[in-house]
Length: 134
Image (tube, rainbow, N blue to C red; front, top):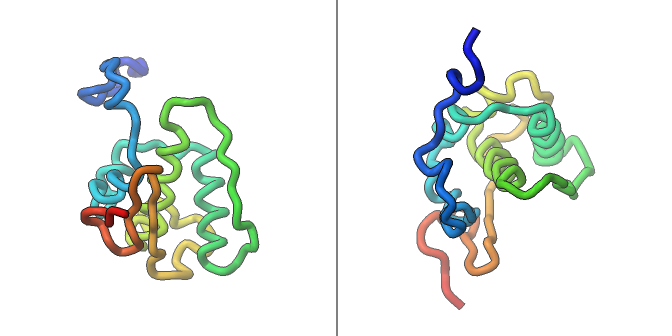
């Protein structure tokens, strides 16, 4: 049996201590993740992530009135990872078919429009280019 060290492959910047490289901008992630396949190839869907996805998909399908999700987690990218993953699944039905086949309502809608805000700029739903400047 492989050890965790043998089974895992570090991302090129995983051991970098440059703080500016560690701060994700959600609007940039929307633009760079494409169809989301690469994101999910390097993502393990934890039970917490599955719970959020199931609840969020039910809401998008009109099968739930739950509209607010409070993400509580230690600092370190977990919340951003959840948001990006859910946004990709909401936008791409093919991803839901691959990664959410067992989740009720996963095929109840085609695609959701996704908007992201990072505090400095925003991208409108369906627009993944340069954000408008105020």
